Length: 413
Image (cartoon, rainbow, N blue to C red):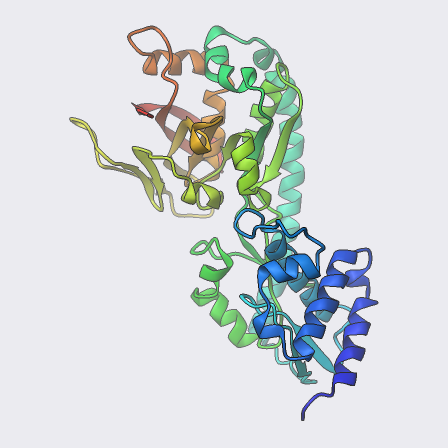
């Protein structure tokens, strides 16, 4: 049965007055604009530039190539619509959705049984997911307490700057540019009111929808909405941010911390950056025009041009069993920023313990002294740009032993 414009507009008004959009004037205006254009048959022809000017009040100088505000706000509106139908709108007669890749709003008659077709198996899965979130919160509390102890234990060490620490961090301490610590955030799927899940095979929303896990979820729960969620990070990444921030905070003010999913290319261009976590969680690194001789891959570290006696690939190994144990590799990379301006430092690996181990080597004086001795040039100075590989042994996700393996001095024009 075809929906009348009157019915659709009533539904839009219902959503605009809901708690999901309360306090969000931008998203109310955006929904009102996109819905009206879609009702009059102009939804298919909407362009990002037009939406920016007409719905968000951007000036005529707005350039979608350098400003992603429209895509960001449309994505957030899409999430708010999903949240609305999982809470206040469960009994609404009309479903309003905003499919990805388009500005056209879709309207359809709600199916009364759409959200009741949930198999017992998936109900058990969602209960397990809820339990997993509770455990994750409990672990976060434990990690916070542990970091508090770490703060007390390492306070004398962090304050005892030695010449090697000063050498490693001088470019960031002497720079006039803002400094951002960017924490890698893996992609989770949020099922409103029921929990979260994650597929290790995907770190973008587009890739996730091609995974078997997500397809099975949509098949078993055809009427349930899901949305991308970037609110979590690894304990190693959080610990690394703490160690680096604590060290640099004694010498420099106004150190900013952000999540990788919120970092813009404009910020990358205008600031000095320390990336914490693997490239798969810091997606900007995959598009960075920086030539590297050592790269992080799915199962280990790739040496592009191995020297005599060096392997071309260093394989990470994870021990089977419930304990998170293994032997992996961490990569420390320092390169120039975009267009040769500023500094980039990347502490990465395939596991959260790798990031923490890399941070330890650049924040603890005795480790920094050893590392400087390994890579120092014949001139007596440290190379301005380099890559260093560490071998990391960890138990229960905690690095218990790590050591220098090899390095490359990057020749940057």
